[in-house]
Amino acid sequence: MLTRIDHIGIACFDLDATVEFYRATYGFEVFHSEVNEDQGVREAMLRINGTDDGAASYVQLLQPTSDDSPVAKWLARHGEGVHHIAFGTPDVDGDAAAIRDRGVRVVYDTPRRGSMGSRITFLHPRDCHGVLTELVTTPGASAAGAPPADPSDH
Ligand code: MC0
Image (cartoon, protein in one colour):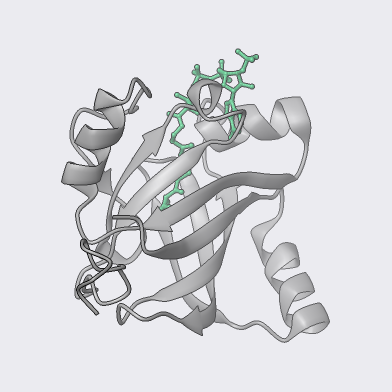
């Protein structure tokens, strides 16, 4: 039940300079920033728009905090750019299990802590046509944006 784009993750070498580019060029301001040691990133979330489920969509700027982190490895191979896309869901556990059952590798057995207290997991890019794909459950978001299970249920 993936209901929205939660964020686009963009890898960068210099978070402060990239934040300034997004502010000066598009007028996007930092909504939230944090260091996530588990993921090896310093991040800034730029809120773009609210969504039907009471959550929002963001651009997420990511600078690695260690050389062996996934973002550092990506930057070394590809340089700066889009690193992943993240879909919002009210049930990351259920969706990850269902997608795993369809033969797609889910990177974590149990979702981990993501930005702003969210719960996240990743789908392996080799199984997703080259796109590292994240699933996110945001605290407080509902299933309001989800289509009805039965199309006659309008
Ligand atoms: C790696 N690959 C990618 C990719 N990263 N393809 C597309 N987009 C990416 N971002 C591809 C490589 O090109 C390679 O393909 C294959 O995956 C294996 O890559 P590797 O460099 O050898 O790396 P592995 O195997 O050690 O790890 C890949 C894996 C890892 C996806 C499992 O990056 C991972 O666990 N990622 C999830 C965590 C993460 O990315 N955290 C940072 C964002 P070939 O064809 O050469 O085999 S943290 C975040 O976003 C949090 C803060 C949040 O949202 O709240």
